[in-house]
Length: 141
Image 1 (cartoon, rainbow, N blue to C red):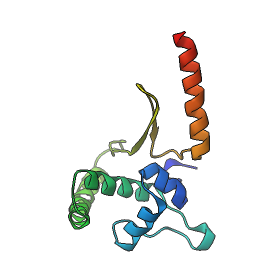
Image 2 (spheres, rainbow, N blue to C red):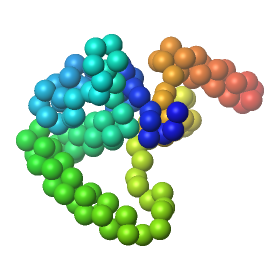
Image 3 (tube, rainbow, N blue to C red):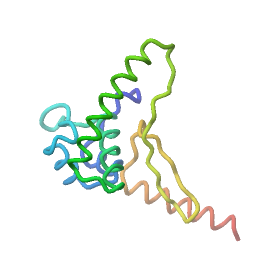
Image 4 (cartoon, rainbow, N blue to C red):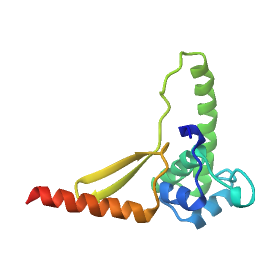
């Protein structure tokens, strides 16, 4: 599956975006996030949903209200369309910013995962963190 074809369930999207499922649903209801694709049990979110979710969360963390976030995103949408039109006239390049998830494994040790990659379930991430901690501590001894 290509990076642009990534599909996330609501649980995965929420985890990648650092929010709860309830927040994802609220953002969709408020029009801050597009509705999921598909129907029924096939409903899913894509990379564009994740990028938008991270943008909304980032703006809120800067202290903007939801109304201000909405206005900023709409303004940014217009700028992105203009940039996309300009980029279409240039040779192909991977200049688009990408979203990353930062996971602290130990103090001073982080794992960075591109938003283009689907993270494993939280239980597997905990196992990875425990494995890293165990192996890094052994090397310190």
